Image (tube, rainbow, N blue to C red):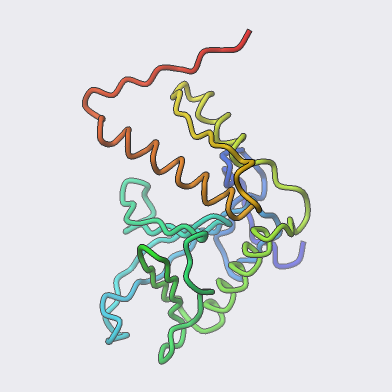
Length: 204
């Protein structure tokens, strides 16, 4: 496929797929469950575009995540797209720095040049279409059910269920899912010393 730079790996719901990871320009998203991986920089001072620090980023239809290096243990912050205040755009006065602004934190992503920044923004637009119901190529399986399956298989027994009937559209459902996951992980972190996870009982 033209401009397809994807490679094998785990997709957004944890399944092993042949074309799940995109790590090269032009970052063309062809499936809603694909994940972008790219190196860049973050602004240390919003008033001085010369002050930057190297970072590693991943981006999916759900969020953008920042790491100090390409190592999971260097995780820094996560910004859920459901909480964005505005559509991400290049910061005025910069050439290739994108501003992701949410209600609770902001992330700046500076790329090598204007074209790479535009490609990242185009990838975000594709993910935005996914969030609005356009699945690009094929229907995306219910993420809540997939995540619950992953947790069950890992014998973690963590419950991220919620009442979907209370929400009007997929974006609100995904936001509720994020809240359920965050609350569960907070409980694990708060009780990490004496926290014992019991696997869910199997239904007969």
